[in-house]
Length: 206
Image (cartoon, rainbow, N blue to C red; front, side, top):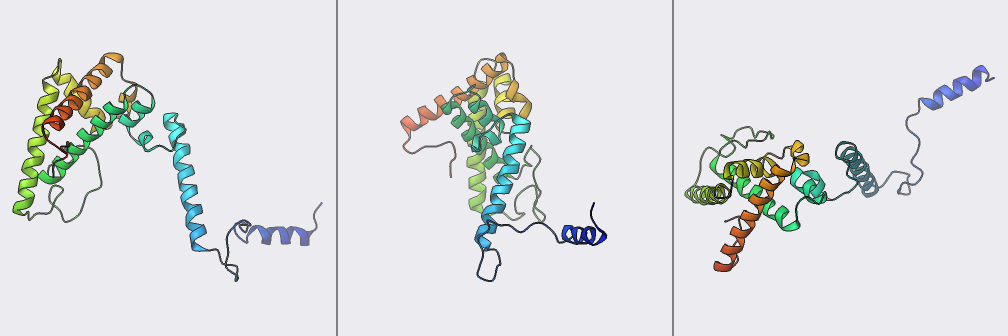
């Protein structure tokens, strides 16, 4: 049984704060080096993120592909590397289109105070040209998807996976997965045709 003095010492010790970090890199004065502290904070943040990823998505990987639905479909082996890249390119085109035209992005994101519909109120002639090219590219890719068999379903599925990033679509049934693959293959084929005819072409036009 602890004496009253021992209990008092134990209580005071418990109130001193967290234990001293024995393995920390320190200066001669005993202060922890900022570089070591920063590395440890990054490790802790990464550990929390990976634990949440494992708990929510069942994935034990630090790959960036695990951070969005299309990437998780790729990690699951349901789509190929080329199809994933085509989907990423399509998402980049749509993001650029929304950014340059000022149309609100359909997925919830942080707002920028002082801006109108996602871009500065005053626009230059160069920005107008960029917006026009972005709109032309978006409409061309939309046409590519709509020309597929069951085009409306294909376009909607590709958009919901690549742009809206709906997590539930990771477990989509096979018929819907076929729509996704059909659309991604069409985008991939279109890109190949244009690369064959135009050197250094990519989905994202400056």
